[in-house]
Amino acid sequence: MKKIFAIIFLFIFCCCNGYNKDINKKLDLLKDIDYSQFSNMSIVKRGAYEYVKYNKIEYKIKRNFLTKKITSIKDVSIIEEKDVSLSKSKDFIKRIEATLKSFDKLKILALSVDDKDNVLLSIPWYEKCTYYFQKLSPATTLQELNATHYKHYCDTWYIDKRCSE
Image 1 (cartoon, rainbow, N blue to C red):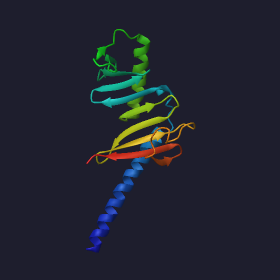
Image 2: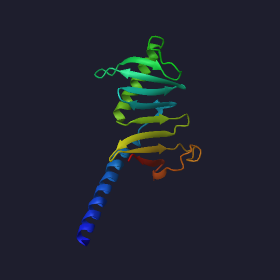
Image 3: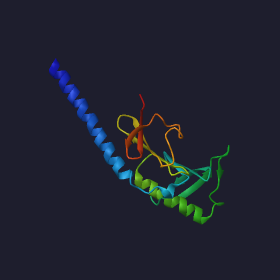
Image 4: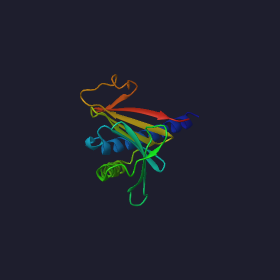
């Protein structure tokens, strides 16, 4: 009986340790990226849409699956969704497309960078868990962001893990 418990314990320890190594690898890929192009912006991927908050306006963006070109932009910061594709300049649309292309390369669920250059990443992971990584700028504390539940991970990065049941 003791051998069975020892084997189960060893199995759980090895599996959990493997997850931590995978998370370390993922964060290693993400922690040295320059997030300045995302400043004052948040992006969340939900199904076939990306929700982009830019200049305090939230847009629901649909892109072509193959070309990744924007096919529709709707302002969802107001009560009734309003199509704004035609009213936005070509420069605005190109900037958003370039930003979304960079976001795609990160292979994450959500990204937010505030005006103080604090970075928040959301990464879905094993066993119905989502890992939230918060990178603090030197001028910010976890208390200021109401994120005291985050644990120090490495350097200026902090982590929070949430799992569904």
